[in-house]
Image 1 (tube, rainbow, N blue to C red):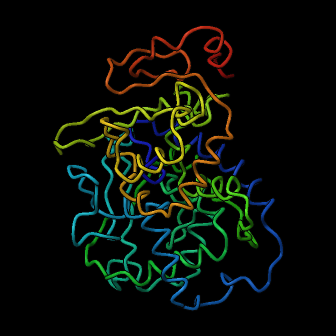
Image 2 (image 1 turned 90 degrees about the horizontal axis):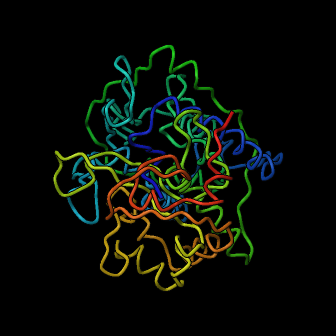
Length: 363
């Protein structure tokens, strides 16, 4: 799974195009959950601050939503990775080289702490709602889709309200960040999403439905579903099958840029079919599978804060998705893979009928 909708190393046009396609899918998903609901908590001018919402918001923000992995300076040299003290919620300036953006662009995750001068201290709650549901910033601009509003818009009204209540409660961070600047070519490709009237809570005893909700909230397919660099479209039949390259300083040396490819999460022998529920939970809690460490760009640092019940639900959902035979091993020499169309360990072993049927060029 991924750091926010942070897709390091992917060409910016690919990112934007694939996320716009995702937005169409997200719209239909949200529409199925949307219904007129004049009593929604999101419609009041100030969301009531309650202990229940504060606790729920903390759980989501510091867990499945991983908000501070973008809206902070993160120390990836430590395990688990964590925000640098004094920067939590204070924003982050992403280098163009990390995002694959050309000169003239500048992407900044803003200071969302309650600081009244440099942060969100003067923003109304409705500003947060519009950003998370529609992708429109506090100043009316269209948000760069590194911000995963395409996923967050599907959060239930109550969960979204809880997130806002918690973000409003964190200590203010007095750090000034520059504004995001996008070239006309990039800006023209980003469109805001239509508002939603209401998104209901995903309830009931079905752990698979709950797991699907959490996997969407965690924007797992942003990294674990590979996209074709030539078209920007997610490769058909490769949902959560891994292989997407993530490029950045994710290791113990903060100056060394490395490439990590996302792993196959499908219930295929080349994926995680070998994991039982207990092994899956242990991997998330410890950041390693037996002796092999998970890369720090995989946000196990915050997923480990999830309850056993929620981790079990995620596991249950992952067991229901289509198995995809796709070997990815970051300890091996990277070679071209016909399935995901990227280079990664064991990429040359992903051959045969599946490669020829899945990896046809998209038109």
